[in-house]
Each structure stands twice: as C-alpha cells, then as structure tokens.
Length: 78
Image (cartoon, rainbow, N blue to C red; front, side):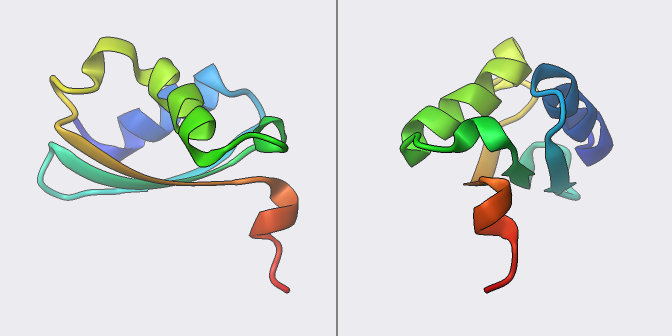
C-alpha cells in the first residue's frame, strides 16, 4: 500500500475532496482531508466517512491512518 493509492481512493469516495496523504512504511499513514460535507459533523462522523472510502483496507493493508478532517472554511488560514 502507498500514500498515492490511499489518496486516490479517498478522492474517489469523496468527490471534490482535497486530500494529502503521507506515510513511508507502507502500513502507517497520515492524511488531511478537506471536504464541504464535513460541515456540521463531529470528528468521529468525519473519520467514518473517510474510513468508508477505504473499506476493508483499514485494519488490513492499512494498519493505521491518522486523520485530520476539515471543511474548506476550517482549512483556510485565519
């Protein structure tokens, strides 16, 4: 598994998302995901939306994924 594949899967599952994924060891990754559908949702609900795009890869090919989920307004600098 690699960061680019994870980025593409998230972008496919959340059309319009801006996604940055990092991770060099093939099993531990960090992602920043910006999507307007996150508005009004708690962090857990946002994370579930992202996990849903990855399906069974989570816990298998992807051992750990640290997420930062933001709306476009939250992502804009102050």
